[in-house]
Image (tube, rainbow, N blue to C red; front, side, top):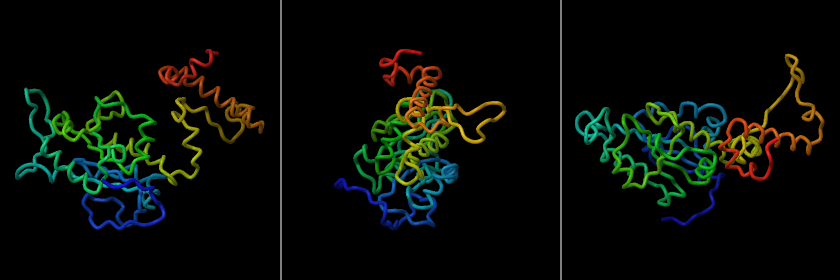
Length: 272
């Protein structure tokens, strides 16, 4: 167990091994940079959209690192089988505990033991729903290990043995966890220092304060007979802030009453 030390984003770290396989290995990684390790049957799915735009630029700059661990080489027998039929019968196949355990052991090399510093997560539709607060918590860690499920799921014993947290992208089912992993990593990486050009952007957007974001406008001032709300052109920053807050509250009440109830604003202010 290592002593907690503040992370530096100014010095370079040298990686002596490519196992797990680090993507964008042609660029140096800043020492202390946040890392995502993905256990998957489809490592070719990464970086995917994470290699584009601001997250891709930050990846190339070494502000964060993306590593994939191919589950197939840990498989059993000549054909590297990673799954088997469900105990008790039923449709589909289940990822084997012994196979997944080997991948978890590989992923744990060089990572902190404390789960607050390095969460270990299985992407599962029965897990706790992913949200902005979770993204912020992950961004404050040193990195994360994500297991992308396939088939009917994973043997429960390996999840229990490694105290794996189950997290869901939403109340729907995907064919695998790769898309969910990319979405969650994107939400997390954009909160890291230096990834977004304007840090204030993350404070003003939806879910940052328990409310949905206010409407946004830009030029032209009039389009198809629709005008930008005059208050936004007034130059009175106090009035603009009041308008934006009121609009955020209105939209949250109308579209996400569950968020409105949780935000506490519903108890402080009457409905308009």
